[in-house]
Image (cartoon, rainbow, N blue to C red; front, side):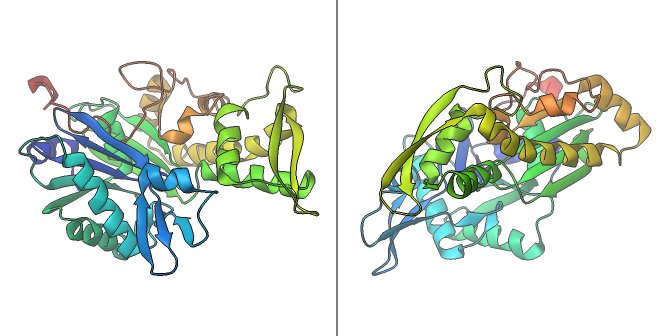
Length: 341
């Protein structure tokens, strides 16, 4: 396991790779984020060959050709399909290198804190087979702290809540090391699932991933909406007849089921904080919680639930602003000034 203070010599002319359940982000020193695409592959079922990667595969999802299926080779932040993960990563690395000069093939990759040795080995093998010469693994919480601007010399503790698509990671960082961490294999994709289940069971409408993702990011709220009667028309397939159909739903209808997922994440945070030593707990009370990951971008800001627990949140953002950290690895390849080392 690496400390933040050990990374500077590793990231020179290197990549930082966030191989996530929903998306893959690659950053390169002096170039910043060079790739941000869905972690998807499109497969021809007749010959099992991959016909599209990333964004191109995502555009096929839900509207695939007769012999094509779109799959996510990673589930819960770990490799579920080794061969396709290897090919997808190789494609993304090659794409990230184009336009760059003299980029050494070495990379820092993130992993969930509760990863098993078998799962870690699968990630390492996939990266090595993808053409990356040296691979350095790092826990997601530590990578998120680095991306948020936490210094390795900071002796006071900071709390990171990284809400991904398939995992939620909570890490307490002090002096460039993890003091305490917790990881659970659930994330914002749970919201997609409960929305689809609700529409199918209670409204008789079957919808696809694109529709549930749109509802999650543009319509539902993680806090009680001011106007619970606001409506939107949702189109899909009638469960009974199989015909195209549409129903109108309200924010008030979806709020209770989404709130249940947020409450589950908040309870995980609360349980983690109760295990901290007094000095660490005092630092977290003073500094609040930094939110990271795609799940932290939802309307209503999950920090609202954390505030209800009596934690003085400072805005749920990085040290550079008041917005959630976009990617846990988005700034790992940036130059650090001498005082940061």
